[in-house]
Length: 168
Image 1 (tube, helix red, strand yellow):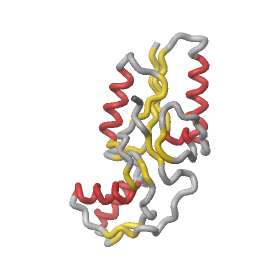
Image 2 (cartoon, helix red, strand yellow):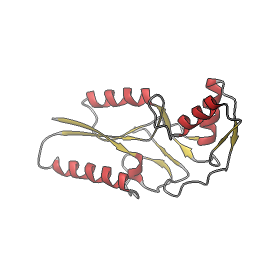
Image 3 (cartoon, one colour):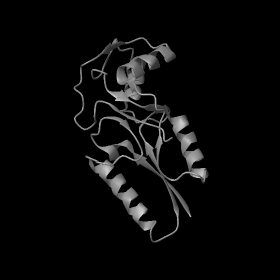
Image 4 (tube, helix red, strand yellow):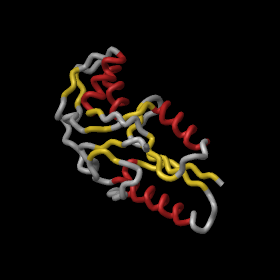
């Protein structure tokens, strides 16, 4: 039997910097704790039952079908309304973004292969600041809007520098 499940970056909790699959998890919110407990329960069941487990940790996805409250969805809505400026945080958070199409392709590739199992980070390993991510997006779509950096405070439930490293 072969089981493939998606996890979340929130399993790492408030750990800063470059994260790896082998790091200890320290979830600090209910969603992260639930995912972490499920993974650990399944890993425990592997001692009793013979099955392959692929736990794919998802981080920051963007693209079609995004939550309307996500960063780029809100930016797109502001552009459509013709807003002159877009309120955001200071933008210095470091993240690892992947387009949803790439995330989906990776999930299929990981789920259908038989050579690697366990925790697998689904990432680009290309950390970027939120500000640069937004500026690059605007450049790509030729969007014109003033970024009102620092309007919102940084969140207290995510570290400032948070990205993944592809398994070697």
